[in-house]
Amino acid sequence: MVQRKILEEIKSLKGKYPVLTITGPRQSGKTTLIKSLFPDWPYFSMETPDVREKVNNNPRELFDRHGHRLLLDEVQRTPNILSYLQTIVDEDPEACFILSGSQNLLMLENISQSLAGRTAIFYLLPFSLEELMDSNFSKEDKYENWIFNGFYPRIYDKQLKPSQFYPNYIETYIQRDVRQIKNIGNLNLFIRFLSICAGHVGQTINYSNLANAAGISLVTVKSWLSVLETSFVIYQLNPYFRNFNKRVTKSTKLYFYDTGLACSLLRMNNVEAVETYYQKGALFENFIINEISKAYFNRGERPPIYYWKDSKNHEIDLLLDLGGKLLPIEIKSGRTFSTAFFKNIAWFQNISDLPIIDCAVIYGGDQDWETEHGKLISWRNLNELLK
Image (spheres, rainbow, N blue to C red):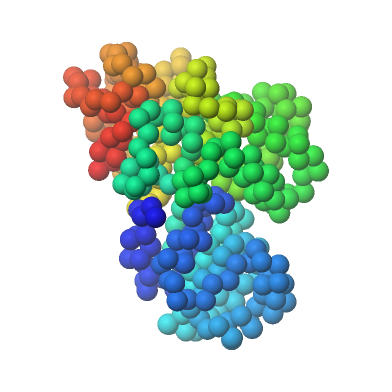
């Protein structure tokens, strides 16, 4: 079993908050995690139709019969239960509930209304590269393998091929969640839109281009992007524009929570397809940003990540905002070092009016170097940067 890095952080807050909430994509390991944390506590999944019906009809019976220490899975399916939890934790100082759910914005909206100040929220994403490297699973030699396989636990636990897992994942989970979140009549068109999004990984979001490519309206594009964010399929990386003039780009960039899913949507059937893909650099960038995000989430923190780009196409792939100081990071899929890797970082150093701590390029090679321009870090040693 892969040891999840977030485990100790969750344990450390048990007893400090009456409710611990764990949210993340379908099949990212939430149920396994909460059951391993509290194996003796009663567990109820609100995905189970008869359980959901009973809870919706009479939520109080659940607590009267089973007590005030429960594991409640997929609670976004029974939002009325949250107001009961609020009353219970206010009246019973010994109460403790572990909630999990696979819908982001809808779930957090309900929690913010009912459990504000009473819950700590954790984000559990699919396995991180660090978690798999520390496990007994085979170590892939090339980053293209990790990009193609993705990081969903079932792929590794059940030794599934990506071609077996992802199409079923899309059909079983994404389409079901879409129906729960929004009544989308043409699911085939929605999946086509999702595939178009996979082709725009790492690009600034242009609603008109997406609308034209999919043959839908601008309103529909924005609505469907929201659905995909709510379902933990995609996320948007915000630009950093504080302390800069109006010539800085303020559009968001599009990324997938898992590169394996993006590869499947791009109809890649093997690793060689990743190696020859004309936008392999964008997939590598997505892979690295995901791993940095996971490192923060696994510490119970929110990733302070941005990108930066001006009107003359000077761009920094990733900026970490570390409390008034910035760490600029360029991400290059090439395996051979070039001084050109640091070109945009040097430009950014000259125009930024905030202190810059270090500078780094994460690249597709194997060796780390200290250069006069900054640190050159192999993708294999990414966590050394975050320490």
